[in-house]
Image (cartoon, rainbow, N blue to C red; front, side):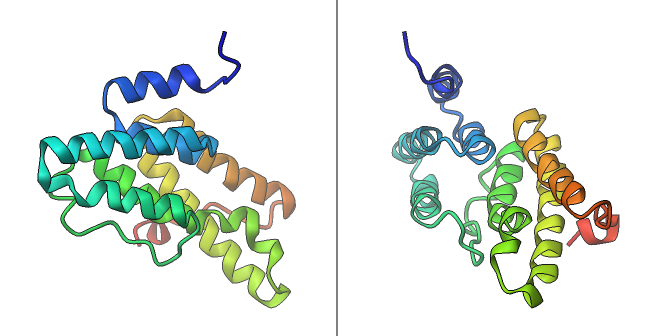
Length: 167
């Protein structure tokens, strides 16, 4: 019996070649085998359709540098992606900024407010994108970041306004 509680979910997503689902699973659980499986699915897709060659390279960069604030999805990908895959790429771009919900306290006090606000905006946007994918795991992860920040600050933080979420 496999003791990895994630193994069945990762296998199910990998068996269907669902690189986007695997990436969202990795982001929600920080389960490295999910990202590895996403990269393998991306390589398989690139073999069958060379137009996808940038996807495995991009995911390998994500693996090498998970908190890259300069991360941008390759320009050629969104035109090839379905709506859920586009949303997943968007969440991947937002993910390093959303991490500031948890990491802001590790920076100098004068930067914490700015970083926390950046994290809140990104987490809210990521939760919205995850909901559009009907991905309850990733949506719950982003929402939990928002709630944890709110509970730490005794209610001083609010969900970003809709105008902030559109950026």
